[in-house]
Image 1 (spheres, helix red, strand yellow):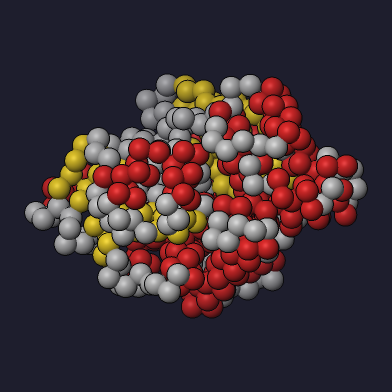
Image 2 (image 1 turned 45 degrees about the vertical axis):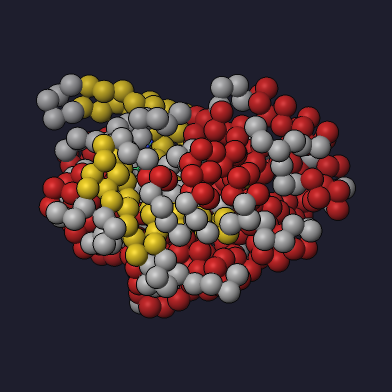
Length: 449
Ligand code: NDP
Ligand code: 2IT
């Protein structure tokens, strides 16, 4: 791990690793937060007395269950699914579901832990949770996806509710999967409870701008970081990892603001076109045809596909990691800095390794950590819940405007908190401390629970 912890926080960290063996991503996420809390425990000794940090590191509830389903040939498969209900001090558990073969408890716990602080930063009444399964949706038919989602919800429904726990999408889970999940919830409970899931389709209770929100929000956060340095996005070259929901809408908003996006990726490789990528083509290939990103280079003569290529070796002004955890390491950070990169905003959760974060901070580039920079997705989920609760639906313009205001507020809060605690420009400390203070105040007020 990177920075050292003070003695008291080190003891807490050791206890977390001991109690949660083998969960390396969860350990990493906890360490990254504890590294920044030294000044907070010094300023507020009552936090130690009430063991708030120890409590925040222990999920309120962890659910693990079997998901049996049949493929199109009739063969039976057994997957494992998780829902970690991490913290409900600020509101119902809120966070996405991830379907990816790499999913295990350690990944869901790291995501749930991050979600607690992120959701605190949004200023909305939402607690933190996360779920998912080791199910691999790649190559599966719509019918297979439906049967899997129905089987998963047949167990999960008993833990959910608009005032209890409200899932949404994440890797491998978008509107199609949420439709199957919502349908099964409605069928089992005999309740049209719109607020039980977010990221729904516009025809059945979804919010305008939710699909776009995470990527758009990441670019709003990026713009605020650049503005704080007297700069903007216009004319900047940009590389964006991934080509899924977050990457596509980060690309879209970056382009709207005059950036030239020259490269993106999927888990098989990267595509590069120095003349700038064509967003409409990427959306068709990924959202409608559900093909690999290599298909883009087959269609566009100026673009090249590099199988297994490293996106972070492409020279750029701005890098937006929007794929997955630990996708950008120390070596990549060094290369980006050497190539003149001035800003990094994380659309993904924990995409940069601790070594990479340290290098970005030492180089004093504008670095926005995921729990602040990608909070626009869950913030707009909270706006969806608000619309559902009032049986209302807002226009795209109004919802996007709210999202923009929320991202500007999150940036301001992180910026000011970093200054207040003597670390100007350090958005990692700003985000962790501001998110932690919000949650811990609520926990203290509610007593020992
Ligand atoms: P999608 O499933 O839509 O897209 C994921 C993209 O990342 C794909 O291009 C995928 O490539 C790539 N990817 C996923 N896993 C890996 C891996 N292990 N190695 C390399 N590439 C990988 O997911 P989202 O866009 O929704 O999520 C992307 C990131 O953003 C995640 O970190 C998620 O937690 C985070 N996030 C998402 C939010 C949301 O609202 N959806 C909100 C906040 C954060 P391939 O197709 O080849 O697997
Ligand atoms: O990581 C995240 O914030 C998400 N996947 C979105 C969660 C949500 O509830 O909208």
